[in-house]
Image (cartoon, rainbow, N blue to C red; front, side, top):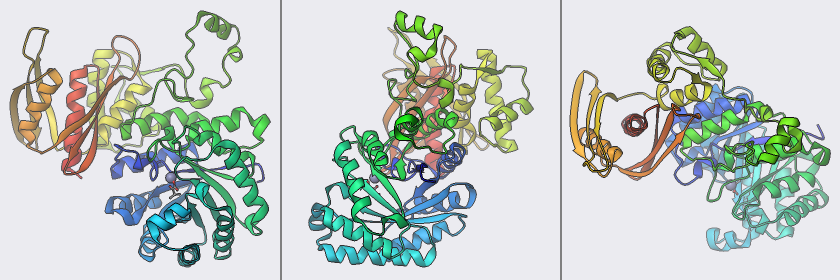
Length: 500
Ligand code: KIV
Ligand code: ZN
């Protein structure tokens, strides 16, 4: 498979380290299933030793998600490796990914160890991981700033210790395409046993070069790309999956490489990750931004109508971007809804379908035409979330000369709660009334509203991020009424706190 590039997705590990993104177990599992549909080769599911949630998520994904290799991250420390192995117990294709920093800066400032000590630690780490599984990846963290002689030495030693994948990270996004490509070419030339492993790269985007560095590395012999959906990740993020994959596909004449990604699943995966993490996608983002296939200038529009290839280098269908399709309406039954959701990748239980059907009917009544995007917004915001408080009723009074006020009625089990409040605006008033009912110390940190589809009766999707006891929670809600969507999003966050 000389021309194949393996796609290693780290959305659930490095991507989840994005400031503000925090996913619960169900979110992670939903994303992992979609990544399997996208047909990635490997899913880095988490860093099990770092928290119980990370451990449980990795374990659940290892047990339930079939197809890709499931990877768990560990430092070269016994407890990390043992926890990673435990979390991966049920995986059909498990891989432990051990890492140790190798740059002078990290050695001196972080570890206070010399090169020989780090090399010994890395070799011991790979050997311990190898006792559990065959497939072991080693990353010399901050490779791009590591002295080359030491980098070649540690790569050779960890391959001798049993590593099957060697990953070269540009941890701080310091490199540039020429330099990084050259580094990969030199590793290929100078490390005598490199042909025994898959050579991988992992680039961060601090200078906006993560995708360019990844592609240059592939051009120079890297066989695996570590990427995230929408480019989410620590600080400025990681190389974006969709950009790397579509560059390889669109310019196969140049790179002469293929992946086995089902590119028609890109858009759906992108939207799911954006909804669940609460990290919005900029409109001009390559491949998945809302403007990526939009033509504004009259000259361009005219030419595209004559022949799309004049201004389109990729077909929108190839990334899963089809014209909004009317799929269901108010006369559609539960069965039709269940079937369409199944086609969209959501296998829901009967109670979940019953619940989402009620919401679907409300939307269909207001909107008449219900698009795929509307259904996804409903499912993501609603059905998968266990509800503690449910919205019974709301009444809002607002106007440019009125003091905005809100009355909210919520139900918890058989109990009904009602509160009213004034606020700086209708949403603020509603959130204050909810605060009075639920009595949870929390601060709203972020609020975003976007139209899911186009037109006057489009559904609005609201995403909020709240902080409660030093943790962040994302809540989502969707409705044709943006105030209702706002209330549902806030309640969704409250319910996530209560069911954590
Ligand atoms: O950026 C990095 O170096 C990492 C390693 C753990 C691979 O994320
Ligand atoms: Zn990273």
